[in-house]
Length: 476
Image 1 (cartoon, helix red, strand yellow):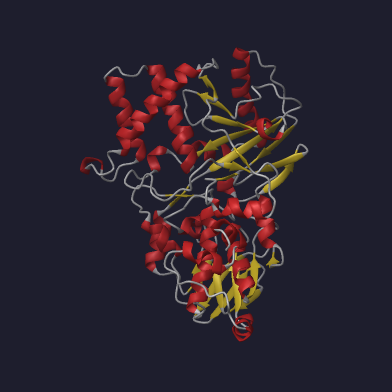
Image 2: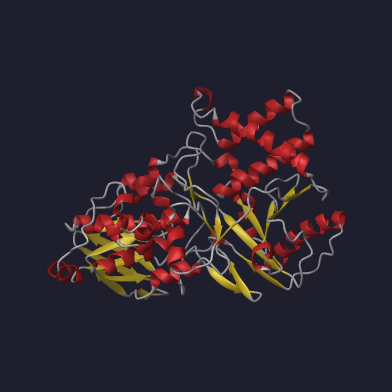
């Protein structure tokens, strides 16, 4: 008997139907007559990211005639592995979040993709606003204070006086209480505010003041550590894409949908048709309205799209001739007076041996940084490294290679991933993912209230959309 891990790795509809709420089980012994009938049903999948490829592969393996249209000249969407300084970097998704029972961990294992659990529980190399090192003893104190702030703020979710408030409001109020009671020093307050950036804002890709307190912590998470793919996340989307009919550089501007009939008009006027379609456009694109739907999407779906937020998580990769920073530290953190300004650098050298640092910036600061040219961004980040280096004996050198992302300015993503802002609900995520009739289906990381914000959410949502389509065809 196959284990659950082996079944998930196959990515067939039969193997994962139990994981998809609201879908009936899939019968794996479809007759040749059924497969012949399915082969005559053309399904258009819009988007060759994780969700679109998962849906297309599942349907093709079942017997459907499937083709994928992708606006970019590459596959992967917000998964984007590129070559850098003799190795690989991920400009989009980098981690499989939660190693236990995660279908992407199983997919990686099935295709021989190397993974390594990053050591996120160890103390980072942390430095204050002036560049001085913060000792492990002082860090332990900061993390304990952070725990108090988060516990106090989280406990206000059901407090009527905090109704309609943000995570930021609750956290700053909790921090203020500690300050007024002299439990925390001004320097410690800066340190805790920095940790709120690395621990919360970094996770949600947005500022504390935008996040809904009422829905903070919603969703489900796989247990275990986070897994890095040293040779690139794109290996997973490449594996799913094998054998699929994918039309790159094909951007849908207008989608006409009627029962049993889908027509997509491309930017160059080309028309493509199918009986059914699965839409995996990023939430940022749906919010921008650059793809028009006729008839218009139901008001309930349009309203949900409008209410939800899309965060910004940008990376700047700095490649150097040699490693001048602490080589064994997973993270180098800068607890500056402006907490969201260059707060964290990920040390790839610790996992790949390459002398590369990846700076992560999120939220409003990341969006503002996008407006600068490459030279100004590099100078800004290097100024932080030089400040730290000057106080700690580092021989900071100029980078030899740089790669910079601007996800909010990318017109075919318009942001990084979803969050639930003040005024929205996690139920809005399910509404975005709801089918329209029995011909138009939706998938993507922003379409699931269970696993949103993650690549495994995208993967599972693609399988869910394929399952729903098959259920509507009477394939059970």
